[in-house]
Image (tube, rainbow, N blue to C red; front, side, top):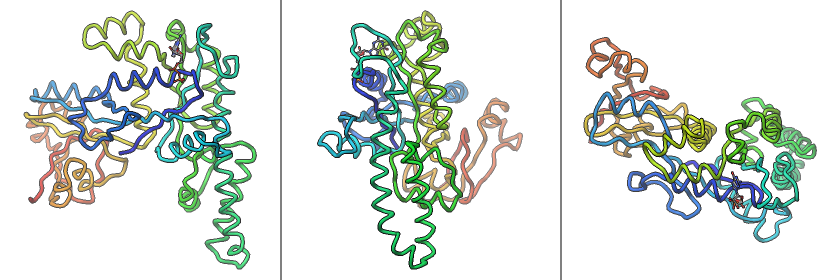
Length: 365
Ligand code: GDP
């Protein structure tokens, strides 16, 4: 499964956030395919459509789709110099598909900051620099290899060489590779290098519990937003402390606490949704009396592969999919009415499943 890694300097609130994630955690019995690892937290993907479908179908069970966060330990500074734990930090980042980068935007006399003051941009740059240096090493090694071939006018090598030169130039300017623009052809080459600064990033601004409601007035948060915008990265504002408390509550108690805080939903829910879409993931549903359930697919997944997420037999024996869009189904008010209105389509194996599709697969066993 795709996973997003939680990174950040010491004392920024990573563990607090990760605790909230595991507390809020999904019932793992429903997700046998998820990783069992103390550093992996499995969360349910919040989706209001699932509630609506539950109201409509009155199923025995409702099962949200799930998603993994990985807690990335290790020492950050000096990581690119390959020192012990630092090296481990980089190899863990290499394994994740996206990065949630926690930065400290809360002042607290009780909690010391590693560099003595609160400066989220500096914090971001410390980590980014390690990733940039590691990528620079990768790119320079590769450039040495293709240089000879490029000289001998090998066409592919020449193109790769040009791409690498652009990468090296950017990295030397301390720019992450994800901020560069590429043609589709170039992009394929770039992806092949598996660079760390190519991974999509979400900045998680951790504010103090007192600042949560006026987070937009928080000067640290504004600076993070500005920085992220320039890089094309997203920002989510949370308060780690509050998320930890929220994760322990359920139902009415949780709603009351949210109301007291003046927020509609836990910051964690927003973080999950943003991280999910950052990975290019989307959701389709199966709905019936026994069960209403959400399933995760990558964008542009065809019907048989989408069926394969449920069971490999569904993919192998795929015949057709009966599909109705979520909005169409809601408008019709019930599955039968949607059918009568001609909103339920029969789709074949080339059909690309859309976000929100409610699907019934027909397959051979
Ligand atoms: P990590 O080193 O990045 O994993 O940071 P921790 O999660 O251990 O947090 C470091 C310290 O900051 C702990 O004492 C936390 O209680 C405190 N902390 C984390 N989040 C918040 C927050 O939102 N507000 C305040 N006041 N303290 C926080």
